[in-house]
Length: 180
Image (cartoon, rainbow, N blue to C red; front, top):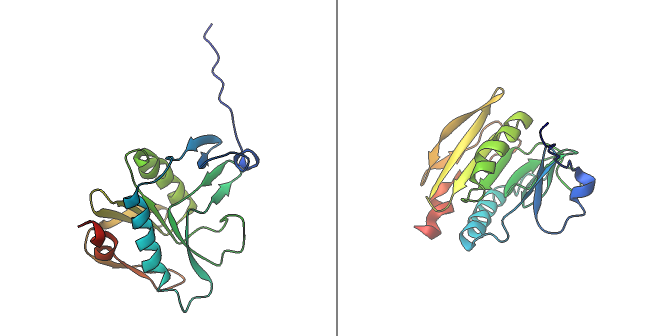
């Protein structure tokens, strides 16, 4: 007779009591990297700034960084940058963001490229952007029906998002300018 394997299952009520930075996927906790690099933080700042400055005429849209996105009671993610419109909850996101950006590092690549990709696709996030600051490239995916389609890999190009509540674009030459 084989040994039993037990896996603990956690929910949002457990999650809010934990110290440190965590994400919860299907009841399983994932520790986030202890501290992001300066390049990681700088990339978040530039993307946040570039999107936010375009929202002066959109009262219902907001660009947020490092906010909890509660998908279900056992799945809470913390995207690096989100563009959300019409969100009313003050503790965490519950409405599906229109854009999610993840800054990918070696320690987060599997989670960002696979698990979160599938979750954001299933949640119908319109755009998912994986940014690789060490490689100076961003891979941009657009939801087409129920599946993401890759719009391209961007290094110096601009991309105008369509089908969003607000009109925004992202100039990747500005995102990576500091690191060239």
